[in-house]
Length: 158
Image 1 (cartoon, one colour):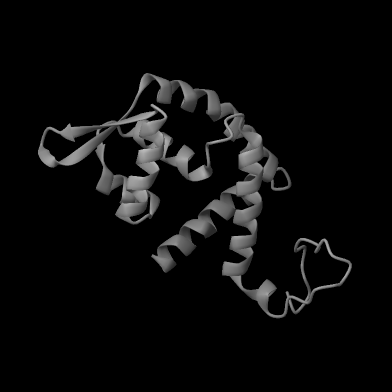
Image 2 (cartoon, rainbow, N blue to C red):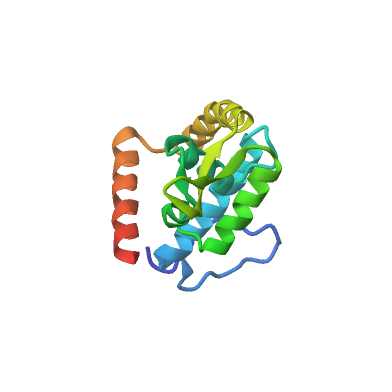
């Protein structure tokens, strides 16, 4: 890799920027990739108010009806106060409802509303197209390898 830029985005100014050791850092490359992928996601979905985090929350609640807020926080790796804010946004839009958990009256069970399910199912094809677009230069084996390597990084950083 050396000190070169290795396919980093070209700065928009006319002055060249030297990135120093940044291209050698996996965390830096992951962050730059994340920014680009999130930007593409946000322009790919028709619903301008849905971010990758909100979409992920809708997917998790749909796949786990009745899950608790603490389970959601653990699954998306956000602190509990951030999860409350995310759920407040989705609840205000009528997409998610919090219901007292029958087995623990201090906990909320999460469910998608009919509007939430409808929105999620309308977004899925757009998200799949986005995913295909950002991975278009990788063949099936490279995609599988990337998922495997990222999974190992998650475990190592966990």
